[in-house]
Image (cartoon, rainbow, N blue to C red; front, side, top):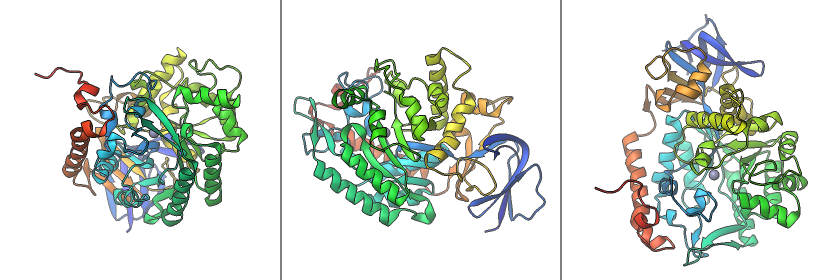
Length: 483
Ligand SMILES: [Zn+2]
């Protein structure tokens, strides 16, 4: 394949455990590896990319993302049920009846998933933990779409001991079925055996328990045992909702974090998605233990998705406190948009507001979370950084324009001024997935039309599939009056 040199850009280069600023430098990659970083390069190169006026940075790592069009969450901005306590997804994920599908099941899985992957690339995310999703075929369709995308994907079809469902009156209930959860976990293990390390190593396995609130301790133990045996990461949605915290306290007399520690479920490569409602969060009123100290000591990681939480009026309290206890903080883009720059910006502002302190939640803290933190969460040292020997996961961003203006500190400019449309080139595993703003592997217009088609199916079938049997406009009123 030969060597490619990227010349003249402002490079965020990694050395001695941290990102450093290399102005007007040269990065050289060959195959899927970075082979040189420095002020100059005298060796051979087959191809060169002029990066003058560009920021050259490692591909972002999103440790929690639902890879689809987000048909449900599009309906929910500013509205939705009060009784699910701001948990947006509980408006659309519960089944309609114990066995009935949720209304978002009307989506077209392939179109929806493809839209998600293409959007991730446009946002410069080259490694993702993908919560899917996909067709009901034990993950095969999703794995093939992950391969098609060209990015690094951590995935497995998920397992859980219970589902939420709505009665015909719209009351939310839980249906527990441990045998089914174990069967799902067995199917997941088979998927992992068959697909881990597929697509040239870009498809990585991860053990996925869908939601702590809907899993027995035994199911999580079984899942963690598979992860340990196969040396894979383990993830679950964790304490995204206030009631999970208090239910564990009521049932066990200890917090969810304490329970996870007691059961041996914490440790490196354990990724807790959200982890909002822990001891010390003001809503929990629980001051009797130090959950953050436990997370820091055990090496578990948190996937932080501030935007979706802030949109519903709640927040992790606070990012600086988690860091101070040594918790591995990573960023997740969760639901639409997969704008990890927006996540960093919103997270930084929320952190400062919650702490009443402008010196915390720094741009560098959040940039580290979106790169090195994500890598550490997966137990990797070859992604989330531009370093000799690391994977050639590289972004080029236009950093000489009216939006950015004069640059003093490029990471502060990135976090507080930039938008994802300034990302021009995305390289993952040495393969160019977007060049000069054009996706290489997708017909972007067709992907957008597919996403719209999938959403329209959900709208069209809403009265038949939603428990209320009402038109969508009545259940989720528009904020703007029709003409
Ligand atoms: Zn999620």
